[in-house]
Amino acid sequence: MLEQTDRLNRFLAEINKEAEEKRGAIIAELREHQEKELVQARNDAQRLREETVASEEKRLVIAQNAALSQERERLRRALSAKREEIANAMLDSARRKLAEFARAPAYDEFLAEQIRKLAERFSGKAFTLFVRLGDLAKARELLCERDGCSAEADPGIALGGCRLECGRITVDDTLDARLEQSRGSVLAEISLPEL
Image (cartoon, rainbow, N blue to C red; front, side, top):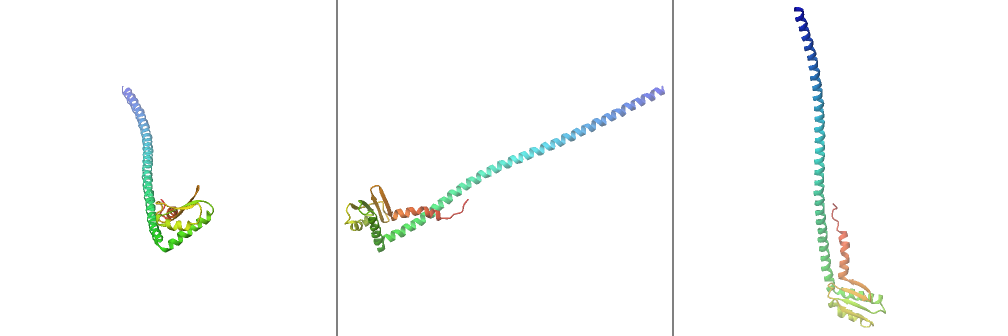
């Protein structure tokens, strides 16, 4: 019986040893699986974090670019308005100076020279000369001997000078037209920062 108990003990010991080995292998396999799962979970979390950060950065960049674009447009409009304001101030100043010139004695010589040049250019043709009301007598006096030519007052001429119409041809050499034509070059000369 001792021998049988001894064999039974050895058998149980072998079974325990084998169970311990299998248990150790299962635990090692489980740890390895857990480690792989942990590494995979960390990788997935890192990838998700990177995608989330990239997505958020993209959203922020888009929102920032939209805000920047709106601000640039607002500043462009403000600069454009400032250019117009400066140009209008310059043209208003020029308008006042032209009005002073039109009241000075030199203006009569200027107007006479204008009319003389236009009359020579359209010599032999019938034309109508338009001037401001205050210049009408002078214009008629200068054109008195020319057949088919007449002078009329134009309330649209505020500063002075004259406009000639001959058929379908119009030559506008009024101070008003000269001033308005200078608007484009005045605007071009006003240098404001680019955005």
